[in-house]
Image (cartoon, rainbow, N blue to C red; front, side, top):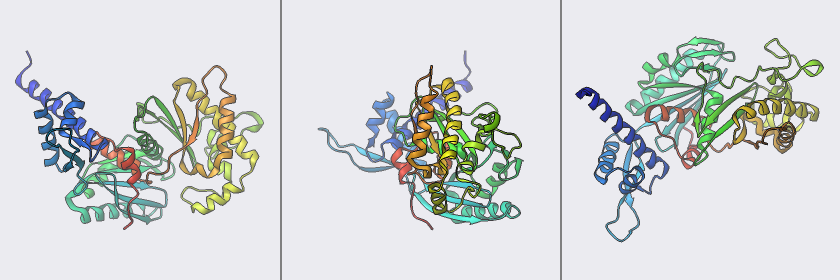
Amino acid sequence: MPNSDDVRDTQASVRRANLRRALQLVFRSPGSQTRAGIARATGLTAATASSLVAELIASRLVVDGEQAASTGGKRATTLSVDADHHLLLGLVIQPTSARVSLFALDGTEVDTRRIAYTAATRDRALDEVVATVAATYGGRMLAAGVQLPGTTDGRSVLESVQLDWRDVPLAERLEPLLGAPVILVNDVDAEAIAEAGMDESPSGYRLFIHLGGGVGAAITLDGELAPGPRDRAGEIGHVQVEFGDTARACRCGRVGCLESAASLSALLGEEFVDGMDPQTVVALAAAADEHDLAAGARALARAIKLISALLDPAEVVIGGPAAVLGDRFLALLQHETDYQASGTASVPVRYADTRATEAAGAAQAALTAVLGVRWSPTQLISASGTSA
């Protein structure tokens, strides 16, 4: 027979799961969800649903709203996300600058700032801005999502060529300064998380490919990130896709890598660098060589078809600043993907939805890590608040 401690642990686990379910229902339908609606959706009793809501209100996660429309009896009180207390930090780290964004629990971006640094001053600048945020917002910080280029296990930066970091325990360093949990997330994974969040009911596999100074990928399944066991999923930039005379030299020292043909540095010229002025990127795209675009689309299509043959994704989404390439590149890529589709189903290719703010994916990763819930598409879109 199970002992009393086992029973209590099971009861506590069930309670936590039901709290997450109730909270997610409020996040999905803020301003219209009710206690009765939670009871119906979860199959719980009205008393249990009310008890869960009372705990969420006491934790400053949910608030009572207006009365719902009458259905013939006493009008129910609607529930909304409490946007006046807890805050999430989204920190986007790039080689020479960082974006620091504060989000209310309902997804509204309430504060954002940028800092610049050099490789020599980066650590100190990041520590100082995190400490400043903690001093400004005190005990309201719920968690932080830190987005960066490179591989991470969520706690340490395993390797980042762009930042010249290897085995850096960044979360452990920042948590005492912030006074809240810190979750690290790869920049492409963060983009994929935000993109999946724009779908009300994501289902199946989605292949997300970032085109920038490099090439990276991420896979989501039913809206959730699907990382590999060694935290290396999506590292496709240096997979060889070109051979013979067409293979170009890559910065990694080899030839024929996907990055050497399909990165924006390859498509727009070596003048392109991540983080450069958007208007300059647009001008480079307008002057892009058609041969380079066609070669890049062909190389990228090879990688897409290999991955698609294994995963059968519902779609392929191209993220990063690649949308500046416009319809002509997308048409080339779709044509090449369809052309190489013999024996497999054609997979639609599109650019990423850019309505969510840059740091939204990192903040969403933090929200999911600490509360187990996701913002609705409307909440992600609203995360474009005001600068401070």
